[in-house]
Every structure is written in structure tokens, then in C-alpha cells.
Amino acid sequence: MDYSVSTLTAVADCDTVLALIEKEKKDLSFRKLSLERQQENYANTTIEVSSEIEAINAELAAVNTVVATLPEGDTKDDNIKRQKKLEYSLFLLTNRKANYGAIALLEKEFNIARVVKELEEADAFTAAVVARRNSI
Image (cartoon, rainbow, N blue to C red):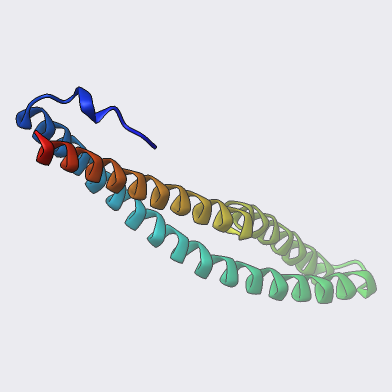
């Protein structure tokens, strides 16, 4: 982008703008680092949650089969309670997957890419201001 750096008429003005850009770059770098750590955590969580969902689905299928074949009584009641707990665990994991799953991971990757572009543009802006300062 072409910046109107020609409106800067003093070295002090250029230095002020450069200081502001530097602060913004530090903020962006921190945001990038934070997003990268979140991305790493999301990637790990996605794998863990998917594995847990598979295990609970298998266990739930087994419990469903047992419940269907048991006669009324304490054993069947215990297995029905176990079935409900597994269904609730599956519900919680499904919600967790929505919050930390593949879609959330892609969103983090997109945010990182945006921050990288902002950092690149900040570098270009810095170069334009430095060139103007050197020409004053």
C-alpha cells in the first residue's frame, strides 16, 4: 500500500510514528504467539476428544446391548444408570469437540494467518516511514 508519508515533515514526527508502529508490532507478535499456543492446544485436544468419543461410543453400544437383554431388576437399573452417564459424557465431549475441534482449529489457523499479514504490513509501513525519515 502507498502511504502518505510525505506528510511527515520532521524527523521527530517520523520517530513518533515508528515508535507507534513498533508498539503495534510487539502487540501483534504477542497475539501471534498466543494464537500459536492455542492452536497447538486445540490440535492436541481434537485428537484426545475424538479418541474419547470413539471409546465412549463403543462402551455405550455394549451397554445398550446389555440393557436390552437384561430382565427387570437391580442389574438392569445399574446398567441404565451407566448408560445415562455414558450418554451425558458423550454429550459433553461432543460439545467440547465443537469448541476445540477441527473447526475451532481452522479458525485459529485463519487468525494466525491474519496476524502474520498484519505484521508484514507493519514492516512495509516501517520501511516507508524510515525511507521518509532518511530523506528529510
